[in-house]
Length: 299
Image 1 (tube, one colour):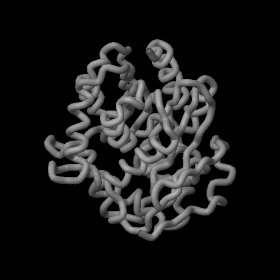
Image 2: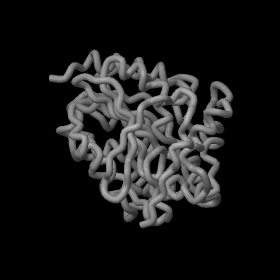
Image 3: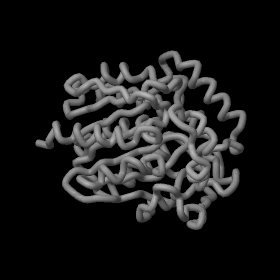
């Protein structure tokens, strides 16, 4: 596997993102993660496609004022290493890399905050490593098994990603999802920063095609098993979807039904936000996460 590393200069002076960089080798790749704050509570923030830990920049400071916050970049994204070939990426590769990071850092008492692929992977990891997790915060995400009809909006996004491939304009894609304001040019550039040229975009290009749309696809069985395990989840869970996500917004009620303890928490909808709700409403979401942790003290 050929591995690429984005030059550090690409990440200089990004607006709102002045966190110290931390790195750890997981197998043949170096993974980057933000690690801010301290305390007994560990908040693990997992991004999705095609973003990186920059997505959480508005949430990290208020959360880190009271707890330890980690926000890793998946392999292929952000400051983490990137495989050059499309077929180097798979559900199992991402799963194993994230589990490797959690185990290498020996993270426990985790409050998972997850969105998009961060949820598909993170919730599967929590289902299989429940002893390390204390709470779940489920933002716009899904757990596809290939057995149900996939939304037309997602299938259109999948087809578009396959058409454009490595020519995907990541920053512009993020900007197109923003419903409440115009994303500034320097923020768009920050979402593009991990990708000096198209050769770095294999991970972003292939991720939508990895979502199982048939039961025999990789990851389908694992996410089906995760659904079963999460249907028996007894630790606190908070579901917070936005009201303007045409791709995954319909999954909010699915997770409220799936997670037995979700009904114990207020039914929260993040108003005036699209798919990347952390970008539009990060401070608001952070406030809800802090309140959730306060009202569900660890035993």
